[in-house]
Image (cartoon, rainbow, N blue to C red; front, side, top):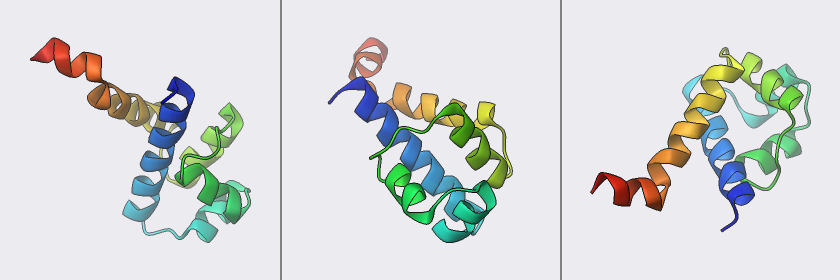
Length: 89
């Protein structure tokens, strides 16, 4: 799997987890971030790569910062990385 696809998928995992944690539907998140609900769905399924502006809007709608949101994405990528698993073994 390409690095871009992995990043898209991890971003989607984090957005869905954060959205559900704050009790928002996809539609509510879309409204609060000024995006379309189907775009939120595509992001959560790892089928789209957000722009920086979209990441900022989503973070704000989730009550967090881009730093926290993208930090969680990065931590997830590191934890899932085979090279990191081998290095720590």
